[in-house]
Structure formats: structure tokens, C-alpha cells
Length: 396
Ligand code: AMP
Ligand code: MG
Image 1: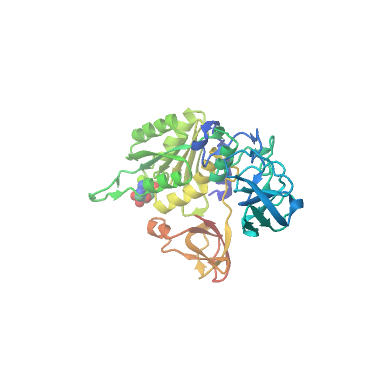
Image 2 (image 1 turned 90 degrees about the vertical axis):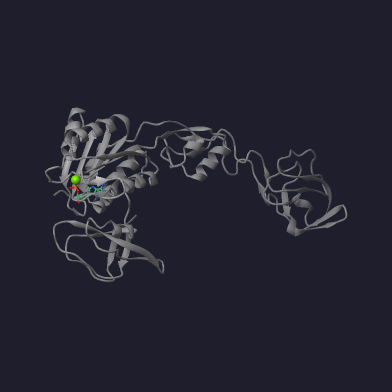
């Protein structure tokens, strides 16, 4: 058995971020910038008011001022504010010449053609040109993950397209003669639960999920499916057939195709439970993960091995998830077996601290327990932990 860290670093060392290309801003949500963004112009582009109120000369306040005009947002000022004068102004409207402050409307009272304003300090409620972003400023660094707010900033700077690492295109294949898509079951058959789960995980991660269907336990069929995936996508995820059964062809095929394409491969027993068997191969530039067939193992293996690699391919710097510390609400006993256990747990916040407890039965085929879990508790080799002990938990 190899330690989890070794397996993870072997995989991460083998994958590199996908080559960047240009994306229309509207398609860049969730992508990682492969360029710096430098502002060509200031934001806001002109000094404007942050409040509805009156544009004034601060030196004239407090006092009764003659209202000489009105400025809604979107209009350019045509007259200046002279001594003893004010202009009614709405949020976002440009500051008229002469004025150096705004008195918010709540601090004013209209009296005929005049407005009585409270005192204002110079610059009060005035948003300066470039107060958000200066022209020439480095706005976003390479490696920035583009969230909706980033897209808003890019729009304000009139950046219509950006160079980003593309979303990895990930083919998901299930293997096994026992698997059916849906409907009535003949004796010995079960429905494929891994593929819908893995496709959803891939999509949630912001990747493009491609359904590669079910492939039987047939070496030639698996080879054809693996080669096709390697020719047409960025990543391959298979489940099943990586253990020591007589029909476990995936690990053999991944190894062989990797060798043909000049890539490395790894077939290992990782010192974890569940998800001990792992098959990983570089099909040329395309990483392939042979995840175990048992659904819980498949889910955990995805979390530990595929997710960090997919993040790296997408250009993310934050590839590995950091566990949080939680208090065990009940004892979590286990047996010493040389492995790190990843128990499916429910995690919740209580008085600002995480607490956790096991979510249902812990066998690797019990997917319903996984469905009820929102964390994986990392139980080091040994006898487990008592109630009240600190446990490291990977939040799912
Ligand atoms: P394997 O690693 O192929 O021997 O599969 C281990 C166990 O996981 C067997 O009980 C399989 O029937 C089950 N299994 C494999 N693939 C799937 C799948 N896609 N959906 C549900 N169960 C699966
Ligand atoms: Mg199988």
C-alpha cells in the first residue's frame, strides 16, 4: 500500500493546466485567468455623487442656497455651481463644475427657489474618477478565478474577452456487465449509479461533463472506449474494474494505452478505506482515472484524486481541499489496519464550531449513507476517536 499523499502528489505532478485561449466575457464565468487585466481607463470614469441631494460648495454650508438646476444620472452637467448656489443632483450624476460636496437630501429642506442645507465637508459624498480602479492599474492577476463580481468589473472596464484556461472536458464511463441504465432488472443486474453521480460532480466543479455510457467487461470494448476518450477529451473518468477480479480490465487497458502514447501510469493500493484500489494513467496529455466500482469508493476516490487534478487542469492554484476541525458528537471507533479511514459524516455548525457524526452505515457499497453525508472524516490509523475529540473533516 502507498500513502495517500504519495498517490495524490504523483497525480498532481503528472497533470498540467490546459492551454489557455480567448473567451468572450460572458463565457468566462468560473474560468481561471491566464492573463493579467490592466485597466485602460479609470472607474468610475468621472467624479460623481454617491447620494441623492444637492451639489454645493462646501464653503457655502450650512446655509440657504439658490437652486439653479437639476442633474439626473446619465446627463452631462451644462452649468456650474456658483457661490451661494446648489444643483439638485441624483446618485451617479457627474459633479458639476464649482461644486465640491454633496449634501444628502435628508439633510436639506426646500424653501421656495432655495434649499436650506446642513454643513458639508469638502469631498463629502463625492466619488472621485478612478476611485474604484485607476487607469493603468493591475486589476486582476493571472490565476484569478472569475466570479460574477469579476465579470462585472471586466464589463465596467469594457473588457470583452479574456485569455483563460478552458473548462476541462471530462468523459465519464461506467464499466461492468452487470450494469443497466434504467428500468426492470434481469437477475444479477443492477442500475448504474456511478455515472450519474460522477457526471454531476464533474459539472458541479465547472467542467464540461460528457457521458461516455456503460461499457461491458470486455477488454476490446474498454480499449476502444478509452482510446476514443483520449482522442476527444481532456480527462477520462472510469469506474469499476481496477481491482484484482478476473474481469478487471480497466487498469490493464489504461496501463497499455498510456505506454502506447508515451505516458506514465500508476496502479496502486492506496492506504485508505474506502477507495483502496486506484488506477491512474496519462494517455499522452490526457489524465485517466480508473476509479473503483463500489459507489462510495468511487465518490471518495473522485474527491481525493480527480478533483484536485481537475482543478489544476483548469488553472486553479488552490487544488487541494483543506480539512476543517470538527468535534465528534459521538465516538467514532475503528480498527487499526494500516489505513487512513474516510468516514462519511454529517457536519453542522453549533455555536460557531463544526460538529460531526457518522452518516449511516460505512460500507463502500452503501451509497445512501454517502448521500446523507456532507463531509469525510479523516480517521488516522488506530482505534478511532471518542466523543468530544477533534476530527479533521473534508467538507464535501
Ligand atoms: P468492480 O470494481 O468492477 O469489481 O466493482 C465493485 C462493485 O461495485 C461491484 O459490486 C459492482 O457491481 C459495483 N459497481 C461497479 N460499477 C458500478 C456502477 N457504475 N454503479 C453501481 N455499482 C457499481
Ligand atoms: Mg466490475
